[in-house]
Length: 88
Image (cartoon, rainbow, N blue to C red; front, side, top):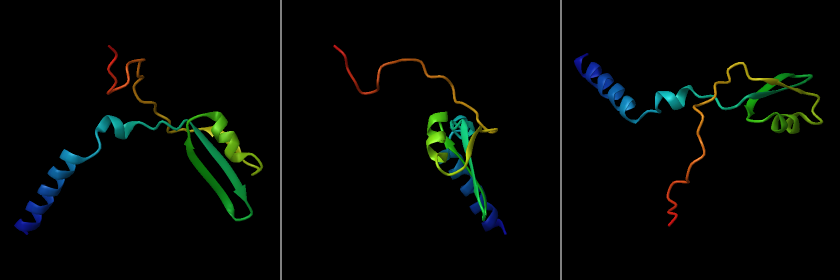
């Protein structure tokens, strides 16, 4: 039993060291969902950053777009220099 507890603790420590940062995990950058349905059931796809992307996906499928209820934008990134570019 002690061995299992030690392995569990080591696994949790490793997951904490190499896991996804909490800030990045809480971001959901996809604002739009596509709702499509047919005779077999409904399908929801919430991986669209813009309304236009969503509208393209439902075009001809008889679906519609709605805002993602779980949308949480990340921190705003201001304009800046691209990493790795030296301007001299």
